[in-house]
Amino acid sequence: CVIYKINPTGLKETKVVQLSKDGELICIWDSIIQASRELGIDRTSISACCRRKPHCNTAGSFKWMYLEDYEKEYPAFKYYFNKVVAAE
Image (cartoon, rainbow, N blue to C red; front, side):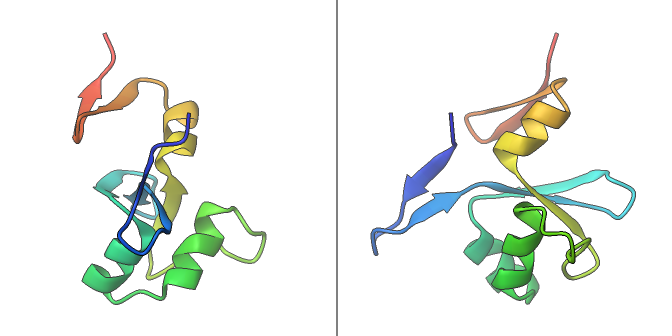
């Protein structure tokens, strides 16, 4: 299940997770474009990190993952109605 919405231009927006270099969760963004605009980080760099390209470890000094991948890697967290909740 990919968590995304269709924006007014018809493009798919997938939620992304912003992590520190140590892997600590900082923020969950509605889309790469939103994170890029808010933080001033090139969207193609964030995208490359989310797609786990070999040359991309960080973008803007942060690690990035698609929310779906984050939930697979860290199953103790679930994203539910725009809130991060710990699994019981």
